[in-house]
Image (tube, rainbow, N blue to C red):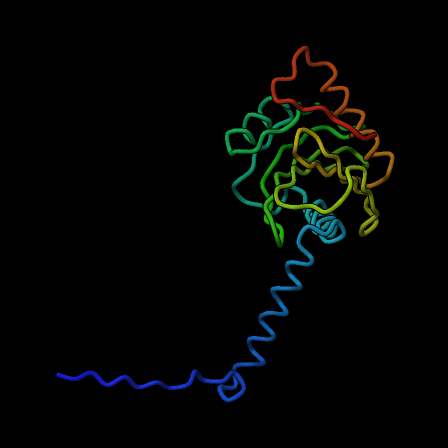
Length: 188
């Protein structure tokens, strides 16, 4: 019995016609990696999601004005949160849900009032922004805050709504006798 070894050259990308497709795929991956974690891109996604609120999202959410109920629901689903206040400025706690963004999943806690709404997002994944990064996106005000190794985003109708929410969160943390989760809010 004899074995004959036949060697054939590998097909060239140019001859196979797949070269442009590979180049296009590489370009999409490179662009996606460049956008991932950019604060402008994450802020754009969060502003869009803030506008949606909790309304049109079936399942995967909790409706409650009780901070303890909302916190426990999020923690049962794997997201530790800072102590949630019952109000963020003039907006009252409505509930929470998980939202699928283009490049990540975030926990979305919503506060609504007569004339305003404020969202707190617990961000997962990379974010290339300093702790006090803020912007205006689609007419909304947004601010990132780093605390205990996590990044929070606060989105509101006005800059004052965002500042009021930051004060409310700082107060809810300051009022706790102990801070077992290690949440120490900076920024504000």
